[in-house]
Image (cartoon, rainbow, N blue to C red; front, side, top):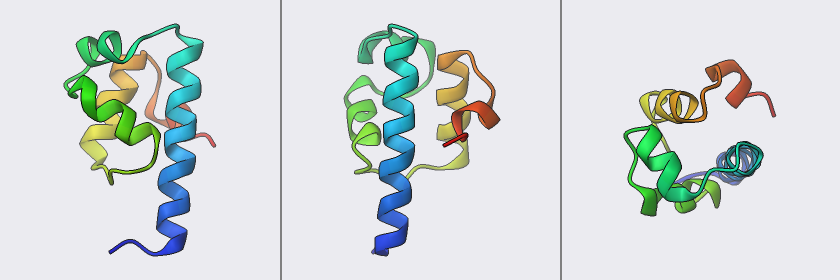
Length: 74
């Protein structure tokens, strides 16, 4: 079970992901097409409901056409 600090981190990451997706004007489905992540899960990541692996973060960076460093800059 995630600690409160870990939950806060997931929410911050999700907020960053949402900001970047909207900035790029991408729908859930379009982002899912750009990376190997199911479109239904993207919303859960954005809400901080799912803990991800480093490979998931790499896929999000690829789908958003940004560096992993930029994705993690929050």
